[in-house]
Amino acid sequence: MPQKNVKLGEGVQIFHPDLVNLYGCTIGDGTKVGTFVEIQKNATIGARCKISSHTFICEGVTIEDEVFIGHGVMFTNDRVPRATASGGALQTEKDWVVVPTVVKKGASIGSGATILCGLTIGERALVGAGAVVTKDVPPDTVVAGVPAKPMGKVKDLESR
Image 1 (cartoon, one colour):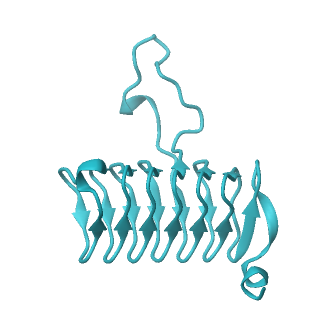
Image 2 (cartoon, one colour):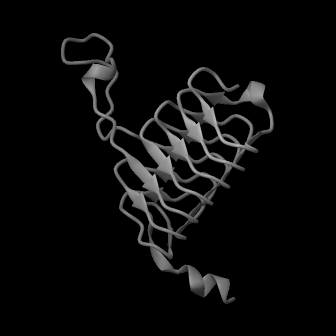
């Protein structure tokens, strides 16, 4: 359910607000958010996006307009995650730096994909279901696999 410091654009649809965790994020006009989605603080979702159920969008992720995010997509924001700091105490925000990720306009990410931090997924790119994206994805490129590798161009799929 939307909590404090959430900025929702006009016409945002959250289908089951009691089963969605939003805090400190921004969601653009006309975007749809599915059930069991978490969008953390300092994450930005553009206009006219579709965020499918069971997706996790962490701090530092920017999703531009008209992006499709499939079911169960996971983003990361830390290259070397640790539970504790060097002295053994649990880490706090002061112990690590968020590594940003950008998903450009019109991109699509298939269900079950994992997007490592610090990457850019280009405009209109297509990430296959279950892919683990470890490198930038150029615009209009299809990637799939573990790790994700280029499989061709989106225009080739659209012409079939």
